[in-house]
Amino acid sequence: MIRFLLNQVGLYVLFLKKVFSKPEKASVYYKQTMHEFVSLGLTSIGIISIISFFMGAVITLQTAYNTENPIYPKYLIGLGCRDSIILEFSSTVAALILAGKMGSNIASEIGTMRVTEQIDALEIMGINSASYLVLPKIIATLLFNPVLTMLSICVGIFGGWVAGTLSGVITSENFIYGIQYAFIPYYITYSLIKTLFFAFIITSVSSFQGYYVSGGSLEVGRSSTKAVVYSSVLILLFNVILTQLLLTS
Image (cartoon, rainbow, N blue to C red):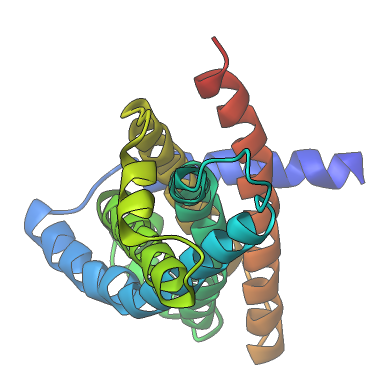
């Protein structure tokens, strides 16, 4: 087991070295990156918005029902919603969702190219297939995933406000005061830093699983599953590490 793990880590490092070496023409990368912006980024806006809205609503209602003690000021509901969304949901939980959406997409796309020998054809033409296929995806997710995180934060807090005011558990004034109270701007920076790490993990791990797939369509499906599982585990691991590094004084 340890030998297999070390072998996979070594192969992954060599894969990354290949991805970031011998780049093709800038114009080619620009066109591919724009395509990935649409394929991986814009198509994720809908699912992130919907899930963020309802998660913000649930966080607000659960906070309200667990702080019914009269000694707790009502604005704590808004504060709890804000910090929960910024610190954890919009970076980590959203990344886990994107690992399923983006990761399976990337692994199946590259895996299909591998089993249909399209990658071999690129290599025969003298093209660095790993860099050509993977680097635009990494660039696109590193640039667009922070946008998705900011969107998630805004939509999540809005969902919390809608749920809180419509259900009557908090007034609009108290909720708005809560999301403004003792706000620490560094929390946004912390969330975006985690998003960048998670974006790289999702893209590189999923591409790695698809790039080295062998066999047929069944193996492509298995590589997609592995991509989602491995990306999710690494996201949770790095969430702990980054939290320890970035939030401890």
